[in-house]
Image 1 (cartoon, rainbow, N blue to C red):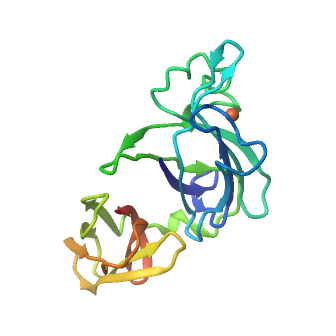
Image 2 (image 1 turned 30 degrees about the vertical axis):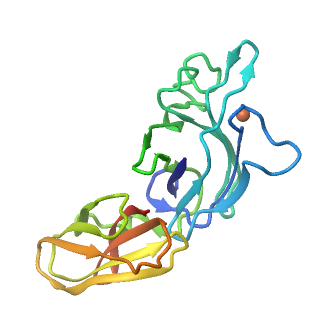
Length: 235
Ligand SMILES: [Fe+2]
């Protein structure tokens, strides 16, 4: 299973780059590794606030007479801010309604935004997106993501293996760039760098054969201002 998302502040106006995510969950049989670190790990969201990790769908364990729903534990620490300890669940899990934590739908412990859909991709892997909102100081303003100036409509196929076609719109005359970044925020490719009039356009990213599989971010930049981005997965 691949889980990914973006970390942002409580008002969803700023990206919280370099947020620490401490993640742990049970194995297939519902057991935790309490001796070593199997199915436990720490990662950082990158400078753009994106995070991603690959693991397995956690198994279930009994809590009294009932199974707890499949869940992933998180300790989330934005730079310079307190740690939030919480859990993530998966839509359609039959054990959610009877679970004391996962079934809460209001108040401080409202779990409804922590139950995410998971879908099977072409590789037989589950994929889920969880965007995290937490108290913190943003280093990249979402207000700077000016989707009124331009937008990426689609990237397909996604996931892709050889090439991905990116359809985007430009809403003001500008010097336009489509750029591709990896999970660490490093620039991988620059496509379609040119002066453009307001119109719909298509760009194609055909990475070198030796580029590793994984998650990449396609950014639309107008006059060097990032106005929109989209996540793509290279198989
Ligand atoms: Fe647990």
